[in-house]
Length: 401
Image 1 (cartoon, rainbow, N blue to C red):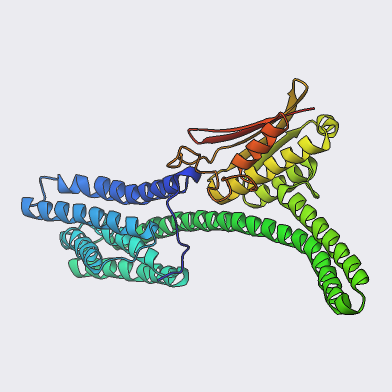
Image 2 (image 1 turned 120 degrees about the vertical axis):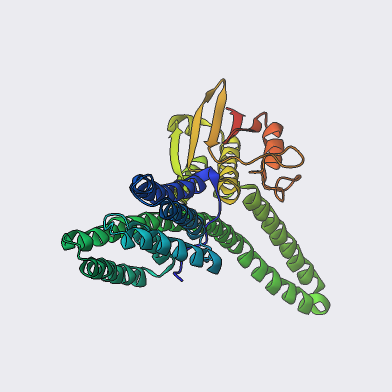
């Protein structure tokens, strides 16, 4: 069996629809070619009725069996033995009857189509080798039968089977290859989104280490010094502990600033970083930001808008199926309005929250989820809202200048 990516049904990015289109294309090709080619012969009154019925039923069974096998193939499922036997037996019968009656034009269609379906379950090299073997075997069968029955047009008995193999095999393997490439690209897009989130977490961890590493090291050293001085020089020990207290307060303030986004969080930097991360995850991004307006905002509101960009981007990567997103900053009265829109919304959660909202971080007070950001914007006279309609999820934040 060939090694193929695991495909998840995902109507949001069109992969499931593409898979259905591939199946219809493959199965429809088999059904139409067999139906049109064999149909006229089956309806020919010069052919005995019993043989016509047998050929018609075996051709229909071939079409059904090939359709089932193709459905399993595009879902990356192994073929069942029953359907393999059914396809081979039906195709063999649909070929044997016309061949025995001297019809060298249609006998090879059913086996060529069925063989092209069966080789799709093999690795690429073995599949092409099997088609190459069929390109020799089927014409040889036609040639041997033509010579045995005294068929004058031996060339037709040889080139027609070869033509059927060349018509079905490469076309069907090519369509399968297109499906596999699309599935792998979707896997890569999903992985890029996960890596982008992991990269953001590492960036946060690095910032936290920068803040806490130095402070904790100094606090540990000074605490050890104060312990040694406690009996020998209580006054100096007390002064050292006051320094420890001040260092702890500084560390706490800087940690809060990091978590709340004030440290090294700017609107311009967050939009630039979000655009880069989303593009790496396969999301088409439109950023339309009035640079002068962003620069005119006070530091607090500007940092809060940067946090909104960061949170919306993280939620989009972790929870949505978006292919397009936009970030627009425009004037809004005496302040500014930031609108972040994407096309990958999911149904609302059990409490009415959009599924894009991270339940773990949407809760209260000190978190950085949308709910907490809404509370912090309200506290400075701004407003944050989010809506989901159809496949669109829109986050809107307003601040005052």
